Length: 455
Ligand code: ASP
Image (cartoon, rainbow, N blue to C red; front, side, top):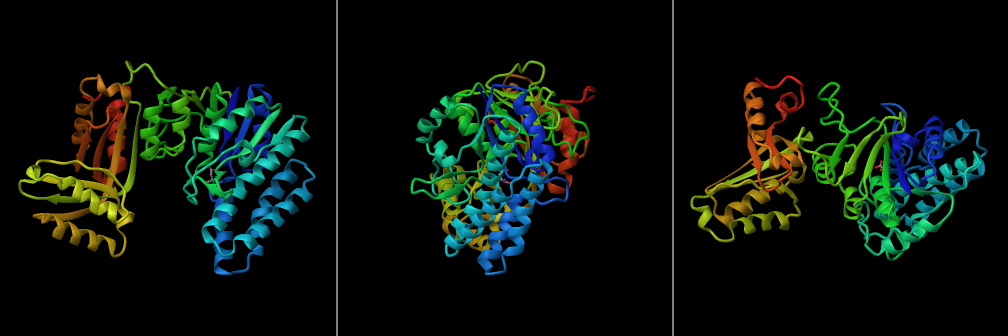
């Protein structure tokens, strides 16, 4: 049995719905389908989820909601019309449901936002089931409540509760094609709670693990996962296989193909994932598996992301001071800040974090606290930092992987601000100035992947 998840661009229009139907019909093992809300039909289009966020914001501000409701429902009407479905009663029901949600949750902004966001996938799953039945399939919409997807009660940031699995297992015994909306579950007290953005991947993975699928297929709009962002390097190498750990590192650090939290359920259940293209389903796609052959290619991919900063502190004899690191990190914890890396030396420690967490008063307060509570000799914050991750399980045993990177940076005349290697066997991190990050990624790509080895 396969669980197939279709992302926003795969279900954005009538034409895309037809492709999805063809994919389902062409393999009887595709028995459970998870869908996103309609995504972008063209580059400048707006995702339905974003339209719903605008609607929620208008409702919260007490603005006129009708134009926003109409824009959202128009997307579903267009899909239904393009599929020649007579679905006016269904779209009328969607409209009534949006209005009812706004009425019910008017005084609870977080719940209102979540209920509206979730309706994007919910209505799309209903429409998809309707269309599949229309073309003769025995398809059924199954709500996350009925499926048993139970989550923590953190609006916009749900995490699955392990007790979900018991009920999910029963889905296996249901007949026909089941269509489940992605992106949300229910808390134990019965509220709709959404996963973080892009979270339909998480639903697909939970369902695949729950029913013990043979494969979790993740349909998107690219033929495969590339070893580097194709907007930085033209025509980069396609990956046939990548391990769960490699994918986790890459999607965390800038690869947007797959939600980084989505891998956990399938990783634990050891279910292979295949990332495929709805627009070219014959292409083999990329397999995400437990192990691959690392011999030819120790490095699997290179990811990069901007918007980081580094809090650099130094204090003479820091290495002798028991508890220094804990106290420093405790200040950040106190201020509600999450950090990414903590490279350190005998008298120095840097904490790398996303710079947007230091907005407003926070920066000043943190600097003051570190100065007064830790009596440091120096503290300064460096902004404009980009992180590059070189990821590959084969690095652990291959000789010269780091040398290739540093030689490539030297040849491209790029200054490395920071290196972090060792704590993860799977990745090597380089910090560079944001202005040179793309150039740095290109240099690394040439070093690891181009046929011409670096002289
Ligand atoms: N529709 C949601 C979003 O745009 C979830 C998803 O598509 O995975 O974030």
